[in-house]
Length: 274
Ligand SMILES: C[S@@+](CC[C@H](N)C(=O)[O-])C[C@H]1O[C@@H](n2cnc3c(N)ncnc32)[C@H](O)[C@@H]1O
Image (tube, rainbow, N blue to C red; front, top):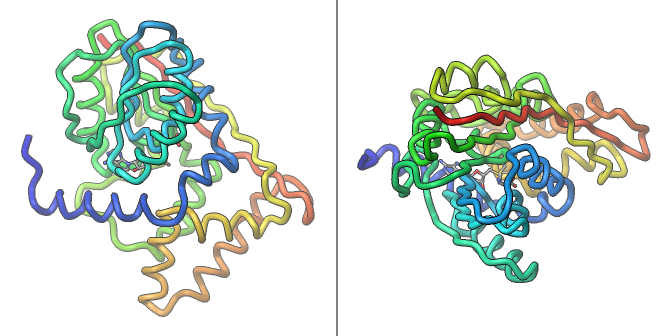
């Protein structure tokens, strides 16, 4: 399918947003456990053909390659793929890195044994298009494995906090954390996937001393937070935005004032493609 010029322009904005800040350093600071969590849940082993969609710097892809799988890491943002390639090189594993939109994947029907995405495909705006593509490129009997932030968890709440400040979503877009809802996943895939696992878990985060450091980290490094803040600045709402981003981690802190601890809830969905 040839994308419309509006879609090309939208994806260029998304690419720029994800290249802003420093997502690779967020992965190193607290997101690394998610890659192995998804690869384990998907049962990835030697010789399997694996596609990681919205792979970023290869958090899940590199673990899959270390398990002996034949891995393609795909993502919209070439800057993140370049960082992933460098990481893979330093880890001594080989995989293929391909620039690709999750809503329009440049891969043949049924060409992978496992199609996975760790907090990745959930950020493409049109959920049904993504689900169609994940199913299309997975072979019948193959595995689809997704790890997504939940609407009720901390990142769902972060997106609700940032929402009023962010630029308006494009037509037809659905909020990313919906992918963390069991009902939404069942509805998106219908009878095309039989879910073997639909379970919630928490990523524990102890990397920040003070709760406010969490908000500062996101303001400096996380593309969606940077985009929302830029829009707030444009609308003269930067003070309100900063106040909201200061209050937010205070409310979610499970530790103390000098030893913050957070839990970010996610859904792991693993199923067999019909
Ligand atoms: C939160 S990061 C997750 C990256 C990686 N999977 C991980 O576990 O660290 C979200 C990723 O989604 C990618 N992304 C956003 N929209 C996309 C789209 N339409 N198609 C493919 N990738 C997309 C971004 O470039 C970014 O790498």
